[in-house]
Structures are given as structure tokens and as C-alpha cells.
Image 1 (cartoon, rainbow, N blue to C red):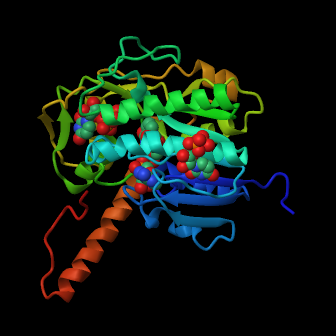
Image 2 (tube, rainbow, N blue to C red):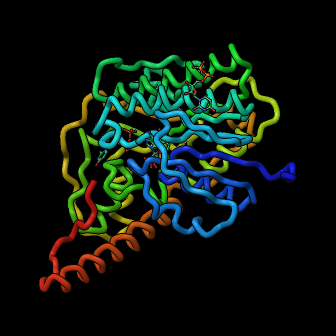
Length: 341
Ligand code: NAD
Ligand code: UDP
Ligand code: UDP
């Protein structure tokens, strides 16, 4: 007999950055966690520490194919999230968001599970209102290089709302704003991982455009706290909820902060701004604060310190491993950048 408080929880994309932190938290709470991932951007390393837990199970599976399991809750996180990863195979990105959502919603319908969608602030596109509230419909290019991600996530939201209206599913939609922290992929091209890796390697920090564009960065622990609160809400009307940290900074400010924090000698180098790069992004989290009694508690400095520590340890390990391989091959490597995409 299953204990009432112990739930069977499926996390798709569970070997990724956010997914691995979510699995860790749910395992610690004593739930039976099934992590499903195709390892496109996630890695076994991210969840290696959970593999020996009796209440954790890992399944290699691509959510664009049907999945038949018995669970009480589903967190649907599967989807590459960084621009270089989601633009690598844009057709697969749209399929993951759309076919993945249909399959997970079909599964939720069959087993009567509650289902959570990891949506994104990208549904607002290059927003014309600031900060962004949930009732803003967005300003998205449907045919640009970011569209596979933005429109895929918008269509997934539509599917979630229609499964609720048409089939009465219990859904939760989180619009996640930029989140950072340990276990981000070191070569995913996102701004925090790029700047920290560049600063630690003594390379120039690559600021795109003039660096005056803004983002609002949320530390991963705060975000996971919000995910679980949203899923656990007993009553919920179904609409999307912005989750993020409203503290807004320019890319130049964050570059400077990371250089100072790491004591790096890196300079700042300006590069062209990518196509359709949103200009400003800041969540209005009034709805989340009221619904979830939640607000982020980790300051940017505190979160960056933890992130810098994580990447410096990884960099040291990777250099040792490369050095050892070089010695084995009779030649020590000189490379200062051991990670690649
Ligand atoms: P991530 O790339 O680290 O994690 C995504 C995971 O999904 C990876 O483990 C990947 O291997 C897996 N995956 C991709 N395609 C799959 C498929 N077809 N089948 C099974 N698994 C698949 O990214 P993340 O930052 O952890 O993002 C997790 C979710 O949160 C994504 O849905 C993303 O869109 C959303 N999100 C993240 C942020 C952020 O700032 N981190 C912001 C907005 C939204
Ligand atoms: N599905 C799944 N697991 C299940 C139930 C359904 O992966 O346990 C998939 C199945 O591939 C189906 C999709 O979810 O195509 C949508 O299911 P739904 O019942 O909503 O629609 P239908 O089966 O009528 O297409
Ligand atoms: N960016 C930058 N240098 C980098 C990587 C990103 O200046 O090395 C900028 C990018 O142009 C964008 C912001 O940082 O304006 C955030 O980029 P990221 O890819 O992290 O997230 P997103 O654009 O999806 O919010």
C-alpha cells in the first residue's frame, strides 16, 4: 500500500540543470521519483548522486514518443533551454515542446495525474511592456531563429489550457525567467555560464551588443521552491504564473560583477547582438507572491558566489582529467578550455 503523502512523481528533463535540482529535492522529501531524459543537454553526472537512492529511478526516453507509466504527478521540463542548444536542431526543439506536451498530457489524462509545465518568459518575446505580467500576450517573431523555442512553448501552453478546458486536467504552468546556478552546462552559451567560465579561464568576457540589454536572474534553489509550491497548491485556476527574481541588471553590470568576484584579469569584448535578442526582461511576480506566499531569497551576489564555486571545481577536475589523459598519451595538454558543446 502506498503512503498517502508519498507520491510517484515523473520529472521529464530530470537530468538537466533545473530537473536535477528538482529530482534531488523531491527524493529528499521521500517521494518516488522517475527521471526521464534523452540526455540531449542533460547528463548522468547531474543525477549520479541520486542513482543509489531506493526512491529514485532513471529512464532514457525521448518525450516525443509515447510513455506509459503510472504516476501521481508530472513535472514536464524536457526541452533544451539555451539558445545554442535549442537552435542546434530547431525541428526537434518544436517537436519536444509540442509532441512532448501532447504525450505527457495524454499520460496525465489516462492516469489522472496533476501536470506541471516548464514554460518560459520567452513567450513574451521582445516584450513591449515592462515588467512583464501574465496577462501580456507577448511580441514574438514566429519565423526567426528563436521561434522554435518561443512558439513551441506557446503552443505547449495552449495544449495545457485546452486539456484543462476539454478534459478537466489539473494543470500548472510556470513561466520561468532566467535561472542560474550549479549544474548549468559549462558550454551552453548562456550568459552566466559563459561569463563565469571566461572569467575563470582568464579569457575575455563576450558581451553581445553594447551590454545595456537587461535580464533578471533567479537562483536555482528559489526557483525549485516555487515549482513545488505551485504543484502543491490545492486550488488553482490554471493560468500561467511568472516565476523569477525581479532584480534586473544589464549584461555589462553582470560581466563586471563576475570579473570582480573571481578576481580575474579578463577584459570585456563586445560582439554583435544575436537576432531577436529580447531587450529587457523582468518578471512581475505579484501573482506568484500572492498564490504561493513565495519570493526569491537569494541575492545575486550570493547565488553568483555558489555558481562560481561550482564552475571552478568542475574546471579543476576537467583540467586534472585532461592532464592525466595527456600524460597517458605521453604529452601533457596545454588546453585552457576543456569543455565543448
Ligand atoms: P537543460 O537543457 O539543462 O535541461 C533540459 C533537459 O531536457 C535536459 O536534461 C535534456 O537532455 C532533456 N531533454 C531535451 N529534449 C528531450 C526530449 N525530447 N526527451 C527527453 N528529454 C529531453 O535546461 P534547463 O535550464 O534545466 O531547463 C529546464 C526546463 O525549464 C526547460 O523546459 C526550459 O525550457 C525551462 N526554462 C528554463 C529556464 C532557465 O533559465 N534555466 C528559463 C525558462 C524556461
Ligand atoms: N499517451 C502517452 N501515454 C499514455 C497515454 C497517452 O504517451 O499513458 C500519448 C499517446 O501517444 C497519445 C497522446 O498521449 O497520442 C495524447 O493522448 P490523448 O488520450 O489525449 O489523445 P489520443 O490518444 O486520442 O490521441
Ligand atoms: N549574452 C552576452 N554574452 C554571452 C552570452 C549571452 O552578452 O556570452 C547576452 C545575450 O545576448 C542576452 C543575455 O546575455 O541578451 C542573456 O542571454 P542568455 O542566452 O543567457 O538568455 P536569454 O537570451 O534566453 O534570456
